[in-house]
Length: 164
Length: 164
DNA sequence: GAAAGATTGTTGTTGACGACAACAATTGCC
DNA sequence: GGCAATTGTTGTCGTCAACAACAATCTTTC
Image 1 (cartoon, each protein chain N blue to C red):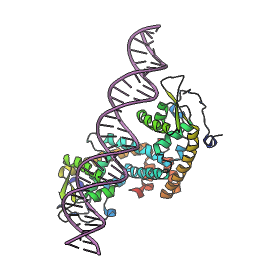
Image 2: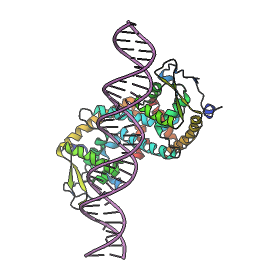
Image 3: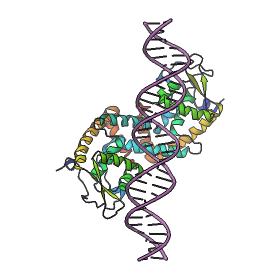
Image 4: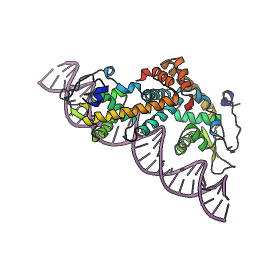
């Protein structure tokens, strides 16, 4: 008796190379169903896809949105501060800001108090754009509500509040 | 008045390049706190990091674990079936299986009923290894419990059950 | 005040991953 | 028999996390 047979009732026997035709929904996930990480991962992929699609016209991805939002709410932050707050590598933020600055949504202003760092600001154009992005993001959020239910979404936010 | 100022009380004024020294926890996330996607993303990153660390000794990553688990519970599946069930690109599964087959955990057996496809099986070594992986994964799951609470983890699994 | 150490932004590399496109071999359909 | 669909494979592209190294600039220490 193999170890896995002991804890996993194998529903199919195919010791030869049979490869029965099988519906997707009759494939068991076994231990996976008890793992939060698996469900969370699948959900996160769904969310990002919907976000990207909903904000497709304005070509803004989740990470870009988070950067713009934080800068908008805290003008003058350094790149280091933004990176730390959002859990982004500062190396990665460089490229993100390059892109956003090219699109005239953000500007890096040389800090006078610390000449190593940049103070980050939205441009005027960036501020009006962000308002639109927020509107679209709210629409995306409604899609999430429709998907898992209003109450469940609230509970989810509450459960995961510690990770923000 | 700018549009964003209307809905976002800006706590700091730094129109010059000041770049005040600021604690991470006094940086506001603004609209981000209301977005499920942000919390879910941060949580998912935390989970994966813990999973990778907890299964670091055996060098198994979440995706590899999911593939092994599904094959273990459904021996004889084709690559297409596994890919579809787990939401993995079949192109990506090729590399995953190459790696797992090199490590003698999985074997591809040519199907006789459909000579295009492979029937996937765990090796004997793969089965005993998977038992160990499951033990470690369960340990990881306990870390999740400690992080968000036993009841919250249960509720989370329930809320996201539709995505598995 | 000079030397040593830390921080900030930048560049580059690596590897995991999702998405797509193209292809040969094979199967299923009409 | 011929044509469309499927399966595994190879390849490319872009996103992302994780590091490492570097120059410029603070900060600390002696």
